[in-house]
Length: 159
Image (cartoon, rainbow, N blue to C red; front, top):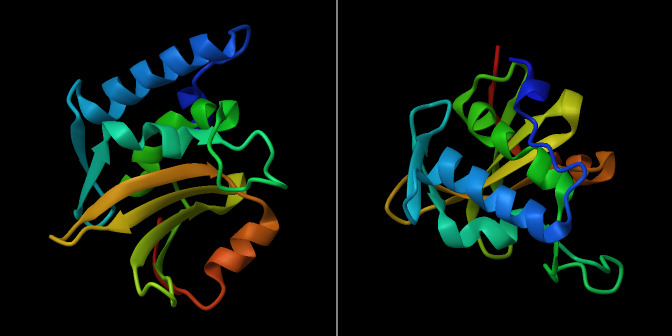
């Protein structure tokens, strides 16, 4: 699959326009016009997309050095790749790797999909009643990828 054909154009738009375009694309692609949308993972597991997850997934900090967890500005790079999420988790993107990631402090289980050629990651959180919830997706640094994957279990690799 050629991911470049799925890019969302943000060029020539002000931030408020990008935000409106992005919310519209997210709603159409993942929510089917509802507050919660459904999709599936590569293994058929259910994934829920929540309308209220938009800000967490597609905003970033205006000052990452000082406030790394503050989400106060739209992230155009995340928006551009928004349509990549579904094909990545469904297993349509070759060489995608899925990891089972366990946070050793909270014991929470997550799924991490990595598209190594693009340094692109998609994070899913385990739901208490089985299945997954979309959390976020972005282009990671090489250092981040090493840190995320170190000691984690590789569950699957897309052919």
